[in-house]
Image 1: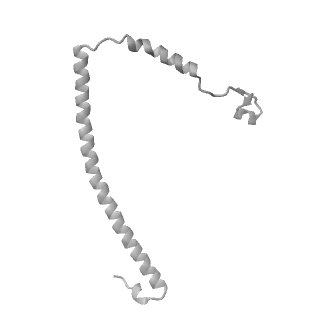
Image 2: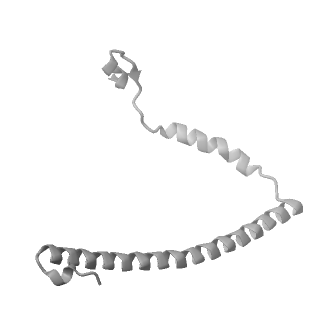
Image 3: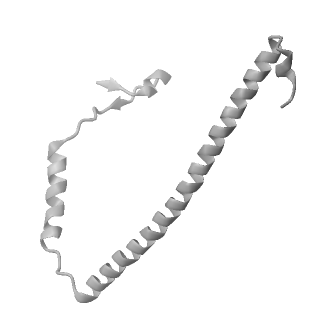
Length: 110
């Protein structure tokens, strides 16, 4: 028999081993089967509601896609700006290093 982490605190609490049970899975599958077999056919009103929901979801997805495309442009612009900044910073660091090494021409502001 195994014991849980509670054993570290002096309490001995038995823990059942955790194993998937095929029988439990099979029973759950069989329990859901009758409801699927006895499902009522879809009536016209329900079908119209379902199709309208699908139509609304497609419209909403179009809005999300347009938003994502416009955000992609902003992300691209930000990435390019960050790349420019990193190049300028690297050049500045090289200039500072040269100045500290004794290249007095590098010490002048540009």
